[in-house]
Image (tube, rainbow, N blue to C red):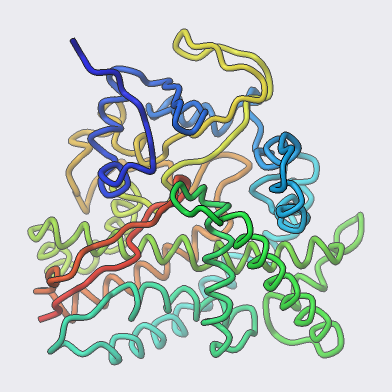
Length: 404
């Protein structure tokens, strides 16, 4: 008799390598009710894309969760919700449309492209700080710092503030990323949100008094037919830009390096053919991307593959599962750097397509290209590769390397 499948993201084996379990769900239970997290788990490509695009689903997943709380967590999270409710990723039209149009102007493709030389310099500095004669933690030395420094520079914030900002961001991620093992995640998220919002209120006041050539000043000055962003919207947008601007790319860089080391023939191919880097970045995003899932709430009662989803049900559409669906991709579990076509879902679909996608791609292109060029023989070190405790995000937190 076949043992029933139960998706539990707190399971260490699933957190380390979820892909065999995703494959089993795709075949046996593509619309899976997980009693462990009281949510629907969707794993096939077409279904995940439908969840991302369908009016049957709502991106406002935090408000129903918060309003359903009847215990002390409601008071603990009140400050967190004040700002997260203003994040683009949790908004629906028409509010989402207004905010997204304003942010598209601030984060123009021209602005992103203008940062390439600065990113190259930062990558070179970080590479110089790695000692090739000793085992190094790639996450600590490069993957965490590069996207953080890039976004801090763009926001006009001192790099020296990063250690403190990183702690606030990590605490906030416990709630946003749906940590399954951190018992005190709500209090930590509250403290992180309180400190980060206070920090940005001070910075915004400074920019109003003394404008600069930076993203925060551009957000302060942004206007549409309805006027400028409110103070809470500005603070929330700064938090989102900082959080999204470094967390996602950090995971992408780490997972890309793991994938290359596990596929030495592809690593050698990229070293021999550096022009492959753009296609390679797309394959890293598909093969083991930083967006493990997107979270939605069923807006109306409806059926999917014979299962009834009731309005209010939580739904996790597993992007990393969809990106390896054999119904969409040939040889889905292989890393193929020149894969074409490669229509992965990592940056989302439709209204909620990731605002920072061009920046993440550029940072990965420069960083991974430089790393492979300098250290084609890199391999895993003696330490353990550790992975995020998160349901929505995925990536290494520790990645020991021997560079040469």
